Amino acid sequence: MMHAPVLAPLTVADLDEVAVIEKISFTAPWPTSAYTTELTTNRLARYVGARINGVLVGFGGIWLMVDEAHITTMAVLPANRRAGVATILLLELLQEARRSGARVATLDVRVSNVEAQSLYRSFGFAEVGRRIRYYDDNGEDALVMTTAELESPTQLEIEVALRTRATERLAHA
Ligand SMILES: CC(C)(COP(=O)(O)OP(=O)(O)OC[C@H]1O[C@@H](n2cnc3c(N)ncnc32)[C@H](O)[C@@H]1OP(=O)(O)O)[C@@H](O)C(=O)NCCC(=O)NCCS
Image 1: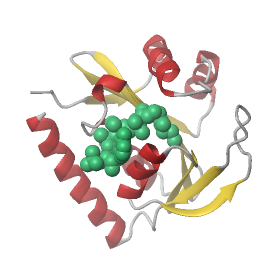
Image 2 (image 1 turned 30 degrees about the vertical axis):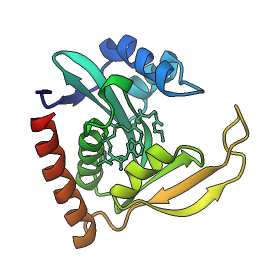
Image 3 (image 1 turned 45 degrees about the horizontal axis):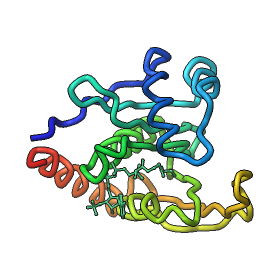
């Protein structure tokens, strides 16, 4: 049985483990210095890590702006994917967004990243636009996706269902 991930805010002490996941997960990884800035000077930023048996298996981040929250990153160790870890992290980030008073959450995702798009669609994120040639490394477009109103019954129902399912799944993994 895979233990449920334990969530906690990321700190600079976590950044060596973040770098490992980052390099495996992204074609253009953020340098550790970018995370240090996020954690120490960006007052809008919140980063959450997920640990299983003490090992960092995933993390995600969000910027809490006045009425909008923006998901900045999300990654899970390959060996721990498809077990609901990103779902648990995103549920936590959206709760945080709601607590901060955000009305909706948005994000950018590579058009080729169908896995992540599928995760986001399961949360009710829908495509609202496209940023042309947004990514410098390969000139790829970004899809801009947004949730329904975070306090709407539709959005809350989606999240309740996802939490129930993720909890059951982790218990049986
Ligand atoms: C995207 C990512 C964070 C998903 O993490 P995860 O912990 O495996 O996600 P979950 O197990 O919570 O998956 C939830 C849902 O997302 C979708 N999904 C996740 N991985 C998928 C895949 N490889 N193929 C298709 N759908 C996928 C599915 O709908 C899945 O639900 P299901 O398993 O019931 O079908 C992970 O694949 C990753 O780290 N990728 C590399 C980094 C990245 O692309 N980050 C996003 C940048 S915007």
